[in-house]
Image (tube, rainbow, N blue to C red; front, top):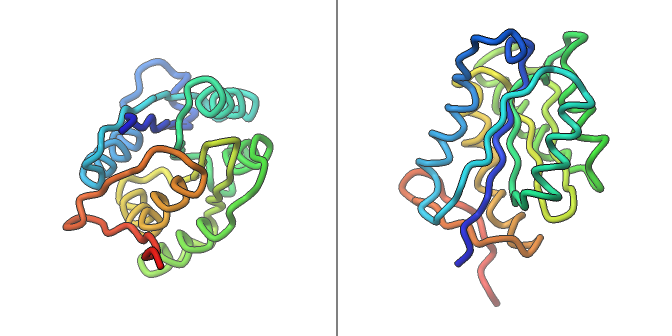
Length: 177
């Protein structure tokens, strides 16, 4: 079984300020480490909130680094500098709006401001790109909601088979007839 490469991209204005501890990207790595029992390798970057930089990073991870899944954090709010969804849409061949819809619905259980979030997801070649919010608590809530569909999505794209610890997260895969 091939080792899956999973891109983790933290988008933050503070990234270009020099001294910055990325707790959001580390939270994604921690959650994926709890979910996945199959071998995987994080491809990790912290970049500024600049649409061309986000686009270049997503393209590089999808096309050159062969990441089957790319998870971003940050840049999904209504602030003028929040352009992660626009960058994702610009580089994707097809969008997967159900991911954003489910993440907002899940987040609304915790905060009324979830409607301000603009997370989305899309497909670029053999990669699924999913935008998450920036707060570690919200990252876990959103991943808990959408991750059950991610292994099957990657199966359908003929990517690596992701095996999960079903005591932590149970992926949905249809039963063979």
